[in-house]
Image (cartoon, rainbow, N blue to C red):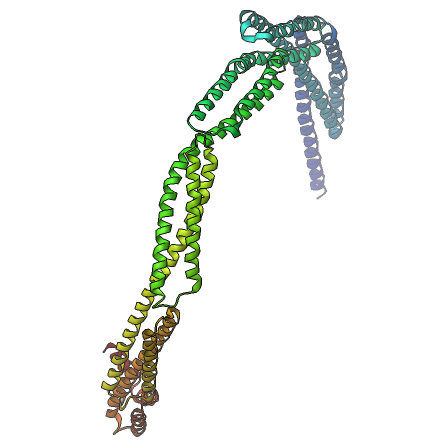
Length: 564
């Protein structure tokens, strides 16, 4: 037993020792990888990267930056790379003592140092690239500025006539660029690449703006010296021609306005010569806006003349229509009021319309006289005609409405008379059906209803014979009679159907009288009620008796009656 225990302990010890050696072996692999990485990053070309700047003028800012990066190289090596070897050596020693955690810390620290070393290298590469790119961009901008400067000088010299009095100020502005170009060379020679970049970028913007001015100036000169004076002249002669054609354009104030615009235009030329192009454009915009206003007024007059012709024709037709309709209405009202009651306000409206139409005709004649003058302001004439057109339109609508009302009176009377004839015919038909039915007698209430309808019809017939007729009252009365007639017909139909149904039930039930005493008793009661015209109660008693001996039979009988 003791032997087994000893063996077990030995096995455990061996396993533990094996694990320790295995872990140590893994950690040593980590150290070897760290050493391999250290060897790789030692090859990073810090110095070669800095040599890229050697082609530049190492003065001023460039030199300062170069020296700073070279110093950073040395510091980075001493601070981050040199301690790596020590960290890895310490890790080896700790492994020998099986201090795995401490060894791992040293390995991790070595990697952090190498990470920082690589980061510093990448940062230096970025800085060098930025310097080189900036120098490259500066040179490109510089060359562009030189080309633009040369082309601008040639353009002003070769096309001096296009720039007018602005040519000399342009030349002075262009000349001012030469010292700025030289200033870039100075900054570049001094190694002040950032200042050089800011300087040449600002210069490029200035040249771009002046080039835009040079493109704009010929257009401004052309508009100032040719286009606008030409438009002034065209407008002046065009208005003169329109006046000959009979247009009144005094409200446009052509001569005064054109003289004012010419004065405003005279200020533009000096603005251009002083290169005050924004001010010149603003002034030209104001002049063009004023011209547009004048053209709009003149165009409005030309359009108004055409509209006046069209409107005159419409108003002539509408006035004739209004006058004829008014005469017709006055005649019709005198005739219609003999037969129908007409509101006095309608008659007054017709007389009022007559006065209004006459006034409108008078105004229209005055307008026609105005249009025959040698000078006409057609916009005012059109406004006046539109006023007339609106009023005539309202009068025609109202007169049409009144005429339709007069026509409707006759139609309403005829319709009411037709309804009354239909009621009389239907009433007689329904009453004949009641008399010809199997009813023991016509129920008293139907006689009463018939008499009421007869009385109402007589009253209405009396109204028809009395003139003038109040049509509204007559229509309401006839409508009431129609409702009475519909009620009379519906209730009569119900009674006739119920009578047939009650009779059928009693007839069918006779087969059960002998064998079923209660059926016989019930049917006797149903017959009594039938003779007294109490058909609904007779049906109820018969249905109850038949359903007790033959369930569902009453529904069958009812369906047969409906089909019949």
